Image 1: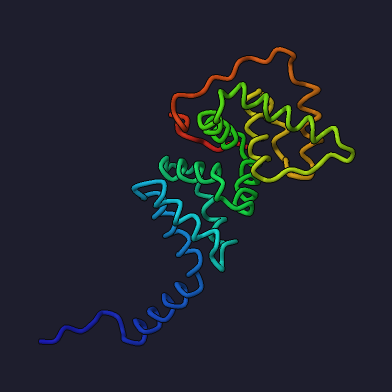
Image 2: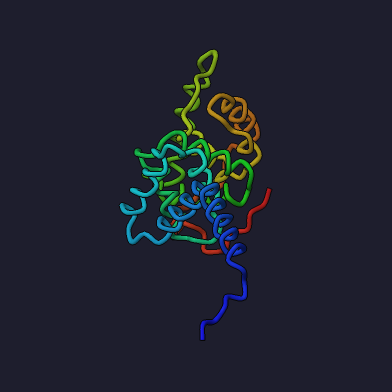
Length: 212
């Protein structure tokens, strides 16, 4: 005896068409989400970096890198570490760094996590690395008008602000307005700032809860 489907064929056909249209309309986001999943489950940084580079060079990179940056700090520590390491690497594009920097500008907690990673990864002891950056920026700020900086240097400066206890100048930081924020920071920075220790882990152990 042949069992009849409880749903009429016309309904099933229309449902299939609707699902197909939805998948087609959202294919970029679905592909971006799948790429983020693959990055978060990669067995090595090199493997993850290949996936990130593919998104940076994709024809629909604006949408896909927005998804990539938006996932940072949402619970997958391996993903967070891979992306943070890539942003500190010379192969990262300025476009991705800009997106990431603007995301940091929206959340104090994200900025603190970035500063933690930056100080762990710093080539020199964090105190010395901060001094080197400040010396470099003093030179740029002495030119009239002050020179612009790159988005990679913006990320460095965000970390400096956070590590020295003054998060406010980092909120709307950009390559063109950095000197205004830097001036405010220099005027309010104590003469004898507390030491900055290199953290034992590349990311904070505590869960991240985003805040304005």
